[in-house]
Amino acid sequence: MLCFLCKGEMKSGKVNFPIDEEDNFILIKGVPAEICEQCGEVFLKDDVAAAIEEIAKTAKATNVEFEILRFAA
Image 1 (cartoon, rainbow, N blue to C red):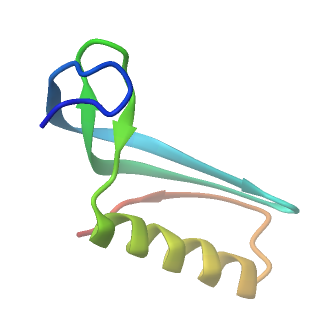
Image 2: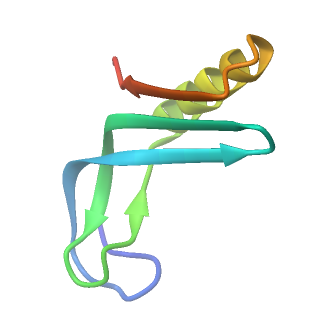
């Protein structure tokens, strides 16, 4: 897979993914991603992005102000 921005080679890895929305800050550690070896751009697969959206939605519904989580596949 090539990077959409620079056409560099993408490599599987894990990233920390911050979400900063309104009054909520969530840091999700160990998120599986494709990372460009050239420019560092991060690409999330659809199922991973959907899981992150659910985590953010749950945190907002429970009025979490600050939370650090580890991604569980």
